[in-house]
Image 1: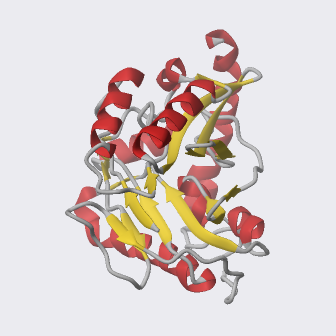
Image 2: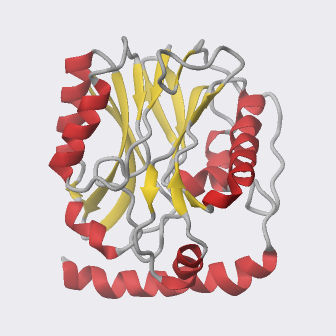
Amino acid sequence: MRIFALELDNDIKGLEERKEYIESMIAKLPSPELVVLPELALCSYMACEQIWKYADDKGKDTAEWAIRMARKYHTYIGVGYLDKDEGDFYNRYMIAGEGGVLGTVTKSEGESAVFKRGWFDNVISTPFGKVGVAICYDSRRKHFYDNVKNEELSLILFPHGAPADPKKAEDEIKGNDYLCGTYMDAFGVPVVYVNSFGKLEYMPGTMGKMMADHGFLMNGRSKIYFSEGQGIDGFIAANVPIEAKKLKREIRFYSKDLIRGNLIFRYLILNPDTKAGIKAYNQKKGDFI
């Protein structure tokens, strides 16, 4: 399968503006069979309530656009978007083809001040096999692994909107390689990591302040992980074999995390930040809607 991962400029705003921008990139691709876009591709990655004005209504507009792109360019397309559903906002990812929408995945541990959280499924069935999809932070969590470990997967997608310290490029690349390489080795299937680039918008809470103080940016670093060749005409792309495979090697987790983290940071900063975010989300969403 001829797969293209498209890094997007996060600084471009507006739904129509971004649709035009994304299509201008797709139009340049040489014979794409699957186009993989980042997390929240249609509205850009924003981890604050300002993103709510870009919310879709149960995926209707996103589906119409994605199917139209698939038919026009004879490809499958994976796209991240913000969805409003029964009074809540969800961070979602959709795969569509010329025949229609194949399925959607919802981010389980989305940014708590912005998205409704829960424990959601991670598998989309397609004509080319089952695809495991984990949006950003979910890719590192045991919940995703538990959802896919008994499946026969043909492909794994990790669409991200991941900010990092641009002064620590080696650390970011090392972390990406470990995450994606672990799943590639465990299943023996291609893994697509796609991230946007550009400035990090305001993010509430202690975590947001820490990232702003350290000058975090969206650094891209997208890559298609597989043993075959890399790169097609200057794009982030690869021709990879697609074959359904079952888990061949168990993956080790540190409690619920694939990557060993700082326990003090988790319990003193991340957990309280998450709880405060959930409270703020529940208070503000009603006023917005």
